[in-house]
Amino acid sequence: MSLLTNFSKLNLECGTDEAGRGCLAGPVTAAAVILPENFNNTILNDSKLLTEKKRNLLKPIIECNAVTYSVQHVFEDEIDNINILNASILAMHKSITQLNPQPNFIIVDGNKFKPYQSIPHQTIIKGDSKFLSIAAASILAKTYRDLYMAKIHEEFPMYNWKQNKGYPTQEHREAIKKYGVTKYHRKSFRLLPEQLKLEL
Image (cartoon, rainbow, N blue to C red; front, side, top):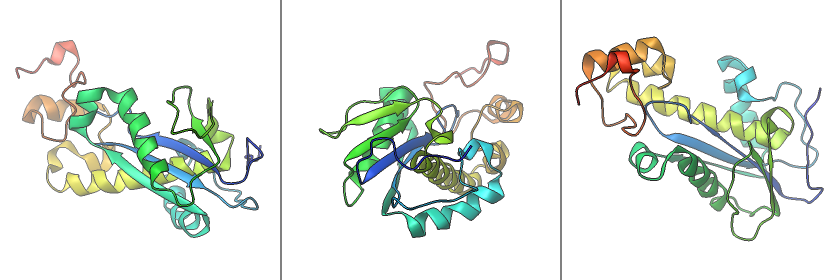
């Protein structure tokens, strides 16, 4: 099924999505994208359904063709302070703020959002596999976050963030158990299951 270009039938409709919500380390990253009305791409889909190679192929295509786009991180201390849901929405809001021109309508992946200024919005469950602009936002959020995780991997290679991107893999949890937590870990998250409790 090909993805749809527009939900609202208004021009300058922006799609927004986040990446990294379920991770134990690193930021939550959101992107907002306004695509031209005639934009089409047969590969573009929800970033989770694509290989890393395809995501990296699509990133410059989206950036070159978008009317405007923005990618923003919200970091661990803020996630711990305001919780991951609020941090995800904040990252989306920060992304939308950077768009020029500003959108006339916002479509959001998922079912949770807070109004942004007075711009009308619609949440769409699995929106990243239904609408091109949300799919594009999901690609940018994922690729930019992956680049950031590869960068901080150099500082703490024992956690293998280059590979696991901060998600709670067994390998990541074993490394937390062995080496403890870093400044990049989300302290409000359950970093270890009960049986691997860490003495903090």
